Image (cartoon, rainbow, N blue to C red; front, side, top):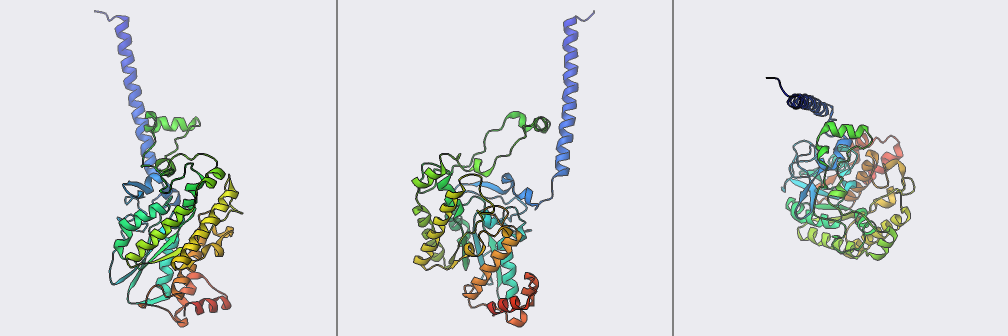
Length: 383
């Protein structure tokens, strides 16, 4: 019995769909395999700048460092390998807290200032205790996030010193979002990934869209954990207040001291003249100046040690990759300034002794000093 033309057409269409589905599956699998084989090695600065790899949601701090990222340890701190930290009478823990400029955005883990600070302190001191500098910085963190992280994860490590390098992200909440609230809830939100079209889950269709000029843009932290910016930064800033920043700094001090740690403030360096922001650069500068004054006044009133990195490093393009984030050289210089202050003021305790001049060749080798007068100046500081 001969098949009807309609039946033959249906069967032909069925075969065609099967063939196209098979070809699509082969292409999809091939592209995904290529993606896997062509992925840059872990630890590359371009890889670690991917928010999806760095962050994970947290019920109190909004978000924390993803321990599955190879640049983080199991505790959610930025560290190489399987290194972990603990409270121990044999260890002097120093914790560096702050935002992306503490974390070391766009530089490798060993180039971030906490790692370089640890190396300098270990090389330039004698002690029967090991010095660990813990990088607890994370991109976007403002003082409310620091308070949560400090109480939830830091105090349990019984640090001797906690370094707070903060200010820019608090200013960001005042400038970029209307309806200022003292808990920053006008800016930060519950962690939520934005919607993604169904066809974006296919690498084949996604690649086709990219070739047509519509590449997929992975969700940035600011869209995942922060509300959409709005309003005019000038108006937002005028309608807000630095009192919340001041109160949060006092809270950080109180929490640190209650747990036996020494809080240390570090003024935040910027480079607006050489790396200006695309919009509202002038109001940003005013905001940073105000927040720096608040930081300084709280340090003075509460008798908190203050390290003035801002005066020493601001507006020096050789140290910066953008208005805020330092390159490896800038991170190294910041670590030198912090190490110098900690040793000069004896903040690491009696168990830590600075090496004598005769032992400073290690420091000279590390810092690459060649001029005799610079060597003498540096040596005298570490006596």
